[in-house]
Length: 115
Image 1 (spheres, rainbow, N blue to C red):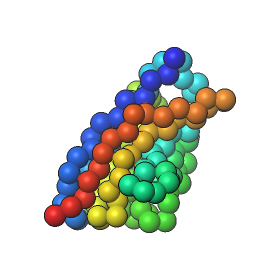
Image 2 (cartoon, one colour):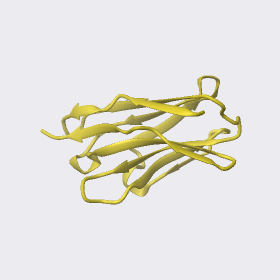
Image 3 (cartoon, rainbow, N blue to C red):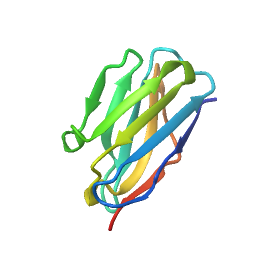
Image 4 (tube, rainbow, N blue to C red):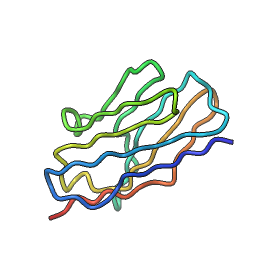
């Protein structure tokens, strides 16, 4: 059974930074894609960024140049460095892991950007 555990959310002022971490454990296939999605109040969940096992990345336009996704394959861990945060980045951020027929989610971590 696969488990995803996120950490690193919190309250930050506009312009500030946060780093999210998601550690995966269990029966994980080496060829996989990990990513971050977010859901703001009253909105649908949206993709933020993904990264393949080979390091290929994809970002939603609104975070390009501000967020960086990275991963440590040896630790089955994915990170999201978020810089120059804006109030519109406020959301619950969810870690995602996909391989073969598996598509799993973490429990979510809250990010609030407010002065």
